[in-house]
Length: 301
Ligand SMILES: [Zn+2]
Image 1 (cartoon, helix red, strand yellow):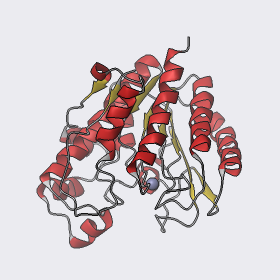
Image 2 (cartoon, helix red, strand yellow; image 1 turned 180 degrees about the vertical axis):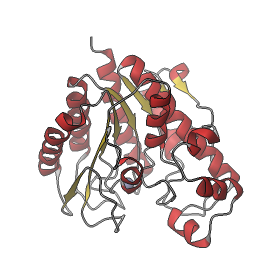
Image 3 (cartoon, rainbow, N blue to C red; image 1 turned 90 degrees about the vertical axis):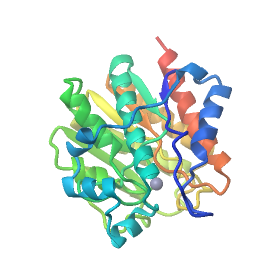
């Protein structure tokens, strides 16, 4: 299947930083090795034009990001050192989610091997997220007449505060976030539905909670397009997680979300969001399994 990646655009990081910069190239290799995507089906997005970003983000914030003018406080809450290369990469990540979302509208499913930058809000960039890819992609689809009502299913282990800030008040978008109750961000901006899970929650309880959340969300959303943030960080071995899902449990999660969204007829755009395993190969395993689940459903009649 067609996928998008910005893996070749790297940026300077201090040694032993937790951001998994190496993951993206390994994931490209893995999805090709698995037969999920042929080499020529792995596309490299153009950087999102600043006008796309300006349609959802605050002009002052964008100006500071563009020029390296973020305050010390903003840089600390972003958690990544500013560089021109960081900004270029982030714009390409947004380009990938926009391309994957357009592909989803055309073919039913689309996937960016990146994105899910859900901590970026209208006027803040934090938690490794410069711009909010889902909000920008949805705005583009609407501008192009390709989307109306929308649903965001955020299964990253951290609550989707930036997405809630941008889309929580939008009457045409329903936002759901399932996350660890005692985890970042500690000051929440409410989604339409937030599901707080106790530390140590395992597969069975998680899947029940997810199914219930979808029972609640799907009839309210009546969405033509859905975004699924398939975070790898609810995994039991994740350094920033606190939940205890197995890899099989995460695979079941992906299948549940894809099948329930697919059954509504919504176009589904899948993005990665977080994943911070000690060994990056574990995160790659989880992300590659998500990609395989998407590809499998694209092949079904
Ligand atoms: Zn996360």
